Length: 300
Image 1 (cartoon, rainbow, N blue to C red):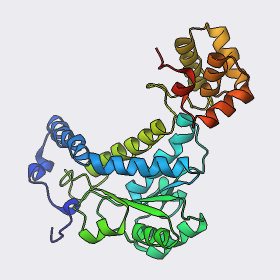
Image 2 (cartoon, rainbow, N blue to C red):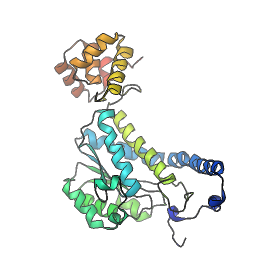
Image 3 (cartoon, rainbow, N blue to C red):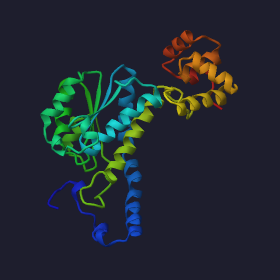
Image 4 (cartoon, rainbow, N blue to C red):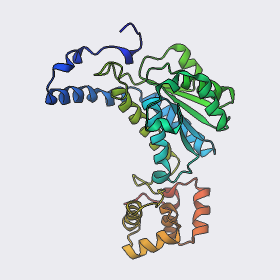
């Protein structure tokens, strides 16, 4: 394809894609997808470094920004949007920035990715500074919007990272605090990075933020104890967590959750330590959110 980027190479296994039956298409695409998790696993050390950067940033009062265009930008916005209900973060703590603005979430605006000055401007508008961490997402590694944003972030003292699906240059590695590069190989449809590269991006972002939330005390055992009760599903989950971990009945769990302002972690400490909401929240602040340290045990 006259392009050195791995994401633009032709996949010999799908060279006759247009001749396949529906079942054959499913099997081929599924076979290609099976290598994505392995490629992500090969970047375990880099992802762990990124996880530490995210955890340190959020624990220190800073913010995590994802910056991308097209599919990459949409996946960043998606991951950011899921943090408050799942882990009780404030909306400003994890933010997704997409080239072309939020209209680009529902309608492609591919030309928006070609202007590095727009990326720089979007970072400036959010007041990015030394306490923040900015992760650029560009599976091809070349998106001007993303590079413009990262250049400005570094100028303003923020730490930066890069997520791509083609071999990174030595210069890219020198420029950023962490570079994550799962090499998923050529796409089934040449250049269609919403496929394997998009799946790899989703896996990496899930791992980064989930791990950071665990490190920062948002999870006890494997329970999301700092979720926000914003709908019936999460109300039900919060009540069940309290029932299982505290051994109380539904009525008591519901009452506790109400007294705790809908915060499961606070309710756990209130009941486990026999204190009111204000004291429970003070104890959690002192323990940096680690419920296990306050209750001296893991969940059953």
